[in-house]
Image (cartoon, rainbow, N blue to C red):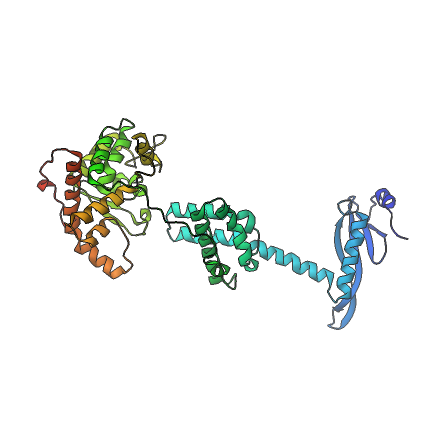
Length: 419
């Protein structure tokens, strides 16, 4: 007799488990603990203990009552019977699906991406770059995170980054797609995927228009900017960072993370660790007399700590990446006029226009990475003397543009072997 809901609800636990039988192999197993579990019994081909083929009895779990109602249990039973009719063993299929789900979780896009990012960290990639890649992962977490990486198709990837494009953040969309491609290359290298589907998406996104970071390049306006910086009335250490920026023209992140252990007042150089550099190569900055004076002024304020330019909240961290830009805004310069990064463009432009220095020496001073490693090592040594002279000339030129009397600089020339 078929089961009824009333019979199921009235079923009470006993000392031993027992069955309430429905139809076509379906039954309800009532446990001593009060559980009511749906099962389906069927027979399938198997192997006996002595290695002979025989029919064996199997039991397929369909869930628990009342989570699975009587009607739902019968539907699940009928679906399993259809599988049997087509030659599929429901118990084996369920086991394979479960294993595939576990494997998919281990090799999901999120899991593989995290392993790739961990590899980046072991290889010493800059913390800022690692943090950015974690952010890219967050952007596509909902769309791709739980999917087995080997099953992700180009269409799915495109659907994940299209919303970024639709919001007008074209560069973010492009770089997120680039990150997805890096994860897939890692997956292919580790035999977690057969191919990189992002290869078929080249040109699929709207290309962002290149934007040059704002910079003041005209000598007269440079002088005006330098005079404005002289009048900055904010935090003293921020003013020193502002004043030092045009003299050393390093990247803003390299300046704000400068540490006192890197500043050698005797050798007149600033040695920046490779881990802090965009090109992952150590960089040595020859310091002019003016730069040394500014570092000396900063030492009076922060010399007892680790960072030359610490955060105003805690000396255990460097100043915010927005500090110098915010100071420029306070001086009245908009983001379209001047940025902290713009001091590099300013130096590059005016040093090249001066005609006094070789382009390779200027490129070395800007820490632009040479793709040819042998040539890079050669040119570093070749241009050191020129870079020393250039550092002092540039600082004197800035003073001239600002309208300040120059002091003799011969006594401050840096030894050629200081690096």
